Length: 201
Image (cartoon, rainbow, N blue to C red; front, top):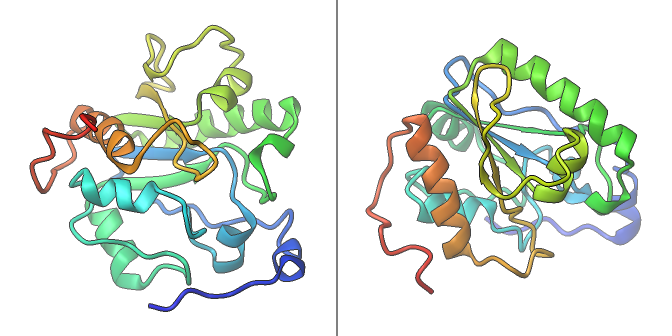
């Protein structure tokens, strides 16, 4: 699949646009991004911007059985593969912006309340928020550390995991895969290839 090309002006038209949640009837593990980027909004597919490590990490972790290339949007087969794996994807804040750090504390707290309502409806086993700073603000947990949280969310186990954006230089695809796989194991998601060596590099 050849990637779409957008000018800066074309992408700016998607500022404030929303992206459809990717959720099905049997979500076991709900991934929660901070908010959609402009490229993601342009193609209506989560983590679509080239350079984002979410989909490579999920594949390397064995959470999805085939690679996903969302740069031009997701195919029906890709969406079905994700949903059949028991994976759902949403965002704390539904509206798109160029950078997550443009969000206000009020928007993040409202997003936390929205997430609680969604989790109450979906009843996943595990919720994984991808971004420690956004989590701390949204849920007023200023001292929270990454990993499994002592407090759940609406009956679900809560994990705070690294953000896969290319702007997060602290993590690699391998370290992201290791973190995401750990949450998937806790959720009871069936996994593919053995990735026991992840996180060593």
